[in-house]
Length: 87
Image 1 (cartoon, rainbow, N blue to C red):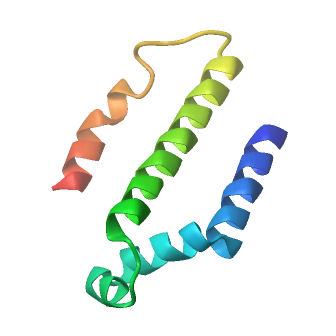
Image 2: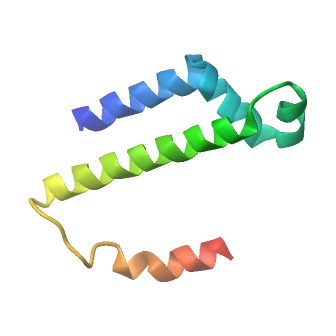
């Protein structure tokens, strides 16, 4: 729990007070206006994907540490709801 709270605070600080975090927020709000403001769209998108991947890997590590190993069937019942939400 403490590790999750620490990661959350780290991400919150990065997005709230960091320049790249503000650029990611601007690109997510309106890509055309952020481009007109001089924000590098490709760089902001790449950073968003990198931070998303790091967060997903940290979540996977925390889940596997709670279960003392991995479970290949974890989340298999939720795949139909995820595919319905994507459509």
